[in-house]
Structure formats: C-alpha cells, structure tokens
Length: 74
Image (cartoon, rainbow, N blue to C red; front, side, top):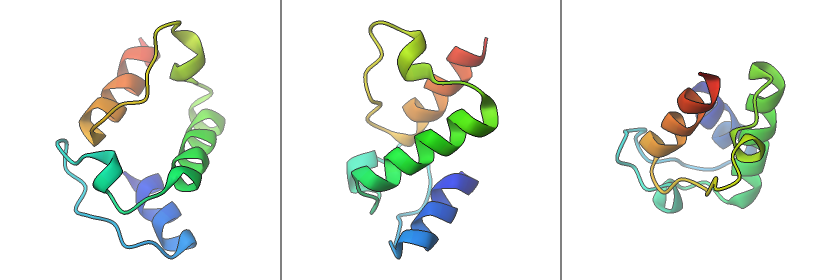
C-alpha cells in the first residue's frame, strides 16, 4: 500500500481509496506507475510473482494484487 501511495505522489497521480475491491484500472495509476511498483517490490521483497508462475496474469483488483504477492511468498 505504501508503494502505491509513494509512486502516486512521485508521479503526480491522484489515487482512489486503497481497498481490496479497487479495480486497478480505475485506481488513478497508469502502466508506468504499476511497472515502478512491481520493480520496487521485486527489489525490496526479492520476489517477482509474475516470473515464478507460468500462468500469472496481472490482477484486476488491489486485493488480487496483494494476494498474488502473498501466494508467491509461500
């Protein structure tokens, strides 16, 4: 959540309230923002759930995004 807020601030984006059911396409962030978030999470968590699973697809909601990382961390 902190990365979402920080990237939005850095990129001058206004984001919607961060809830589990927030659709990422309607969050106020663009593809560059998501690329930055994923890159930073990979660096800090040493985890890339998009490369660890052959059938990984980009999540639709914030809850799915968080769940993807939680599942990959197991």
